[in-house]
Structures are given as structure tokens and as C-alpha cells.
Image 1: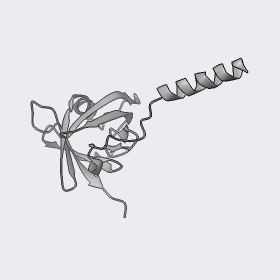
Image 2: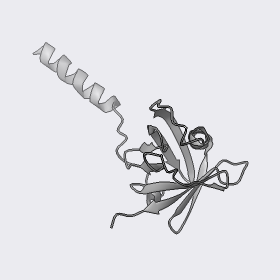
Image 3: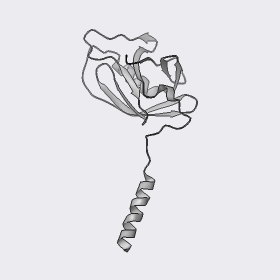
Image 4: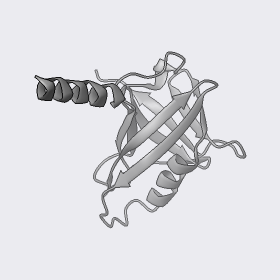
Length: 145
């Protein structure tokens, strides 16, 4: 009986310590979540898909605080945090390591994600900024037809 009680208590305590990432804070801006954001500019320069590029560059911010995407050459993943005042932070970013000369701006893209600390949304355009400069990256929402 004592062993069953101790095991049950241990399971209860361990489950109480578990934190879930499935819900965004109530104050988080839901308008940027669960959308396909196609990269259209980096450091104010337009981004176009090269003829021999396999995929377009994009990110998707999921409701469970994970990010998936593509740099135009490599797959991309990680986590993000939204905070009041349009604050955003990307962390634990991972990427595949393929070499692609068709995407010379790939490192600028990943650097922009790492440096961004806030965002703005106007219509279907998402801009990622840091507190010191103009937009690091701009995206447009793409909707399935």
C-alpha cells in the first residue's frame, strides 16, 4: 500500500512539473500564427526565387511555439516566443547543412531570425526588426486557394 501511494505521489508531482508549449499567452498576437509567411525582402533588398532554387524561403509560426520553414536551400526549425508589445524571440534554431550556391542570402536570412526582437504586421505583410534598425526581413502571407 505504501509503495502504491509513493509511486502515485511521484507521478502526480512529476506531471505537475511538466510545462506545455501548446498554448500561446493570452496577450500574444494570434494574427501571425499558423500562417505561411513567404520571404520577400532582407535588409530592404527584394528576394526572388532563383531559377535553380528548389523551394521558396518561408517560415510558419505554429501555435505550439515552434517554427518550421525553409531558407530556399535548407530546412529550418526552432522555437519562438511572443510577448506583449509585438515582441518576438527566436531560439534553438536548427537548419540542415546542404550547400547551395543558388541562395547566396541564406546566412542573412538565418541571421535576421536570430537578431529579430520585435515585429509589425500590416495587412498581409510581416516585418521582423531589431530595436536598432529598419526591417531585417519582410514576409507576405500566402493563402491556399
